[in-house]
Length: 349
View 1 (spheres, helix red, strand yellow):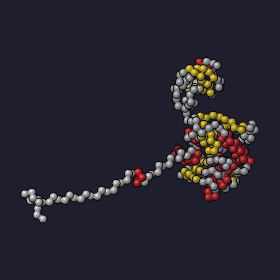
View 2 (view 1 turned 135 degrees about the horizontal axis):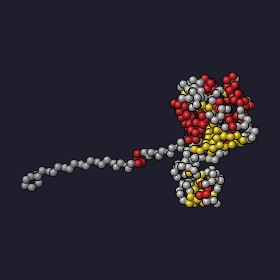
View 3 (view 1 turned 45 degrees about the horizontal axis):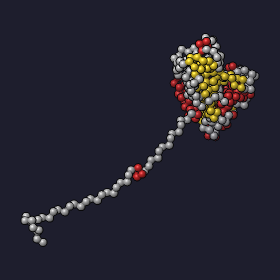
C-alpha cells in the first residue's frame, strides 16, 4: 500500500495499484485503484464517474461518449501473427452492436475516421484495422485493387492479394465480436471506395453479418458476388461517379435474386470520395445527407426501437356504461274535478 499523496508525484502510476487515499470524485479518503492512469472509487456503482490524475476538469464531470485505444488482434496474414487496429468503445455500459470498418490500402483516411466517430457516438463498438502498420500489406495489394477495378472489370474477389485482405478483416471481425459488451449477433460492415468492395467480399463469406453499408464502392468480379450476401445492403453513390455507377449496376442486376434486400441512396451531383474532407470532391451537404442515411440504416437494423406495448383493448360501450333504465311511461293526466252546485249538494243524475 502506498499513500495517495505519494502516488500523485509519480510520473507513471503503476497499473492496478491499490491505495488508501483521497478520491478525486467524492473527496473522501478511502480505497481507490489506479486504472490506466485513472483513479476509481471502489465503492461506487457507476464507473463512468471518473477523473484523470492530472485532469483540470471538475470532480464529477460527465464521461465522454466514447473512448479509443490501439489494440492487436490475432491473424495469420502478418508474419508476426498479430495485426494492429484502432478500437472505439462507447462509455455507456450496455451490451452493444458493432461495426467493422474495412479500409483500403490507403489506411485510416479521414472518411473512415469520420465514420468510426459517428458510429461510436451512436453507441456502436467500432474497429478499424490499421493496414498502413500491418506487416505484409503493401504496394502489391494496392496495385491488385486498382488494376482489377480499372482494367479487368472489377476487384477480383478470388485473387490472392484480395483474399489476404478479406482474411485479415475476417480475423478482425472475430476479434470485434469477442470484445467486452459486444453482442456477437449484431455486427455490421462499412467500407468506402475500394474498402466497400472488400466489405462486400467479406460479407459474401461471413453469413452472420447483420448489415452491410457501402459508400461509392468499386465494381467487383465476379459481378454477381452480391448473391452470396445474406445481410441487407445499403449502397450510397453519387450521380456523377462513373466507377461507383458500375458497382451499383452490378447490385441492381442481382437485386431480385438475392435473399436479402439491397437498397440504394442517391446523392445528386456527388462525385467519388464526396465524403473525404481533405479532397476536392467533398461537399458538406451531400456528406451529411449520406451519413444520415448510413447511420439510420445501421441503427434501424442493429438498434431497432423497442416494440410498443400492446394497446388496451377497448370494451364495447354496453360493457362500460351502466344499462339504461327503461323509459318511464308518461303518467296519466289527473281527471278534472267535477262541477258541483253552489249549495254543495251533489249534482242531479
